[in-house]
Length: 464
Image (cartoon, rainbow, N blue to C red; front, side, top):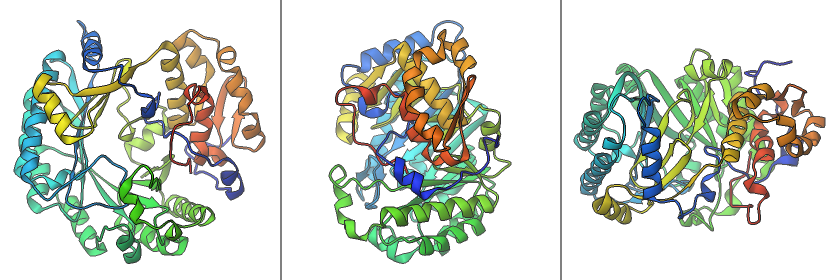
């Protein structure tokens, strides 16, 4: 049997056979199944339950900082486009008020092991404003001395003041968007970012000794070909980030209005898109990067790689992480919390979010409480997405079930994939083989009860 961290094997015919829309499984149930019957009161109830006497489960904090000066046409994030930097100070005032409502509900001895600032573009905000947010967080929560503290930066916006402030505050992980260095692609997606500028920011981050630098790439953008994108990949390998995220461009112009600025005819064909994917996977693994799962690569010495090998890797709304034991509290507009047996999402738009915080401190408008069946299926899907293997005895011991009885229908539905060599169905385990690792979402979908319900076919991006 191959090792679980061996690189995926690419078979275009099989990928085209199974490619379809499906969840990314940053949560289960996926976010489209959250509902407005779960609100701030239900969220507060779960917070109180999970902060009962003796609870020491660590914390993860995610802050959504939604501002951008200009629109990138590929973007599917919740963003507020403006050039009015003064809005960021008002926004931080409200995030601090949200923390004022949240932090008294959380036991002080629970330490924060992970902090992440996402967006939007966090570095849209002045360095002094961001420092005020970080200092306010430190006063309200107990940050572990070894906490992972990360931020997404835009090389076009970040300044020396930003980088100095981040280093002084103890940030140790930097993530920067690159997407593609090709000028024609950049023009088509309205994001002009030179290689020279990107290298200069990257090198400065190395000088400031940030422990890990991640870069984001996107495949499937307009005017991309395997040949043009290979030039970008070669430059990325030369730059040498610690981690890479390779995202599949989800073209949803009916749902995301600014994507209509991208003509459908400019997009690579499905076959060309797969050629691009194959090239990137083969080039990165040849350069020594380990395929972590779905869309992430890391150096062999990275802690993500170690977590993959010892089966402690986890997946949440920030992607793959080593912080499996944390309750995740999301702050800011559109942020999603994963606390105990619930998910809770804040209001998405800026003004309604700020108005809700002014009224009551919390701004949750929808979410869900997980049933026993949800928790069970989340566990199975997470293990598939993160470890490429599910040991039946572990699930049975954890949840008090007989695996083959509960999941007999799901296992039977996977038989065609087994015959195609994507996975191995054994008496004691289900294991995804290298041929099936790029189709892990498809395999996980067999265990998704929501996809089988009436109206379960929600809008998702394609699996590859």
